[in-house]
Each structure stands twice: as structure tokens, then as C-alpha cells.
Image: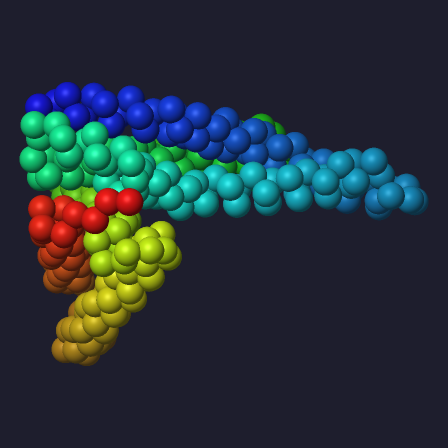
Length: 293
């Protein structure tokens, strides 16, 4: 039955998520091309101003393009927030509004309902993160031209060196750790918005959206405090560790890699704990404190 729920949830979310992610990707490509044109125009206008008086047309076009670029990339990097808002609206409609009456009459457990929403939300948030990464990489390659060219070959060479290093044993381990941490972060981001909506709908008789926003801010504050504690102890650990080394002693790459493991692993453990706690609270609320409108 979980498979059927996933099919329904993916179909329901695709109506809004596919246009959003496609729009973000198209806007990002357009912004990169516009940035390339704007920087080249600006360079041409500066060289023009040394030889001629007045304001060249390229300078005006470049200024207008810069404003458009700012708006485009603000939208691109804010798309994660829009994605989370759409996920929150989907679960609010499914678990709190009238649609919930039909959903909970199906021969499906609350756990299956919740996991279906989590999996769908997780997949779409990961897609959004990948789209933003792709736009960022494209921006560094095309958005900052050198000597009037279309592609920044110096950045491409740096990317080539990075990819070569990533295929080394240490690079593979770092990629695996960062990938696991990113996936755990996406899971927690999804479960945070879901837990806020579910708990807000359970504890408030009216103004459930406002209650969900308040709970989301509370969860964010608590997780922020936990992250600050982890970073504080991590900083103390590094200060103590590096102070024990002699200034004449140079660390090997594997020793530096080992030094960063406590913070990475500690961050991953804290992220997983937060996600598990929020999942348990959400599941318990769905099973015991269902409060539909």
C-alpha cells in the first residue's frame, strides 16, 4: 500500500514541483548567460570610456542586467524555502484539512502515510539541492568570463583538478561523508516542516498555520542551539589538538582528514538524532492526537 501512496503523493507534488524546479534551472541558466553578457559589456564600456566621452550604451545595458541578475539568483537560492513551503502546504492539506478525512479512511496506517510524505518530500528537496548546485557550478564557469570569453577555462581547470583529487581514496571518503551529511540534512529539513504542521494541527484548535509557524521557529531555535554546542566543542577540540603539535611538525593529508572526523561524525549523529526525535513526535501525534478541521 505504501507504493500506491507514493504514486499518489508524487503525482500530487509533481504539479507544483516540476514547474518550480524547471523554472529554477531555466532561470539559473538565463542568469548565467545574462551575467556573462553583463560583465563583458561592463569591460567594454570601461575600455570605451578611456577613449571617448559620454556614457556608452553598453554601460546602461550592463546596469540593467545586473539588477535582473540579482533578482534571478535571489529566486534561485530561495527556491529551497519555496520547496519547503510547498511541502508544508501539501502535508497541511493531507493531514489537517478536509482531504485528511478521506486519507485516514483508507486501509493505511499513519506510519505509512507519514513515510510516503517523507520520501516524496525528501526526493524533491534533494532534486532542488542538485539543481542549485548545478546552477552554482554553471555560474562559476560561464558567469565570470575572462578576457571577453564565454567560458572561464581557469575555473574549468580547477574543477578538473578537484575531480581528479576526488577519485583518490581520501577524496572518495570525503565525498561519501559529505553526501551522507547532506542527505541527512535534507531529511531533517523535511521532517522539521512536517513535524511543525502535524504538531501545530494537533495542539491548536484554531490558527493552526500560526501554531505550525511557531513550532517550526521553536524547532529551528533548538536545533540551532544544538549546532552551536557541537561547533563550540569542535572548536575547543581543534584548538587543544593543534596546540599539542610542534610548529616544526607538518601534518600529513590523512592526519588532517582524521582531525575533521569528530566534528563531521558528531554533526551527523546530532542530525540523525534530531530527525528521529521529530519523526517519533510526528508519528505519535498522527496516531493519538489527530485534530482535523
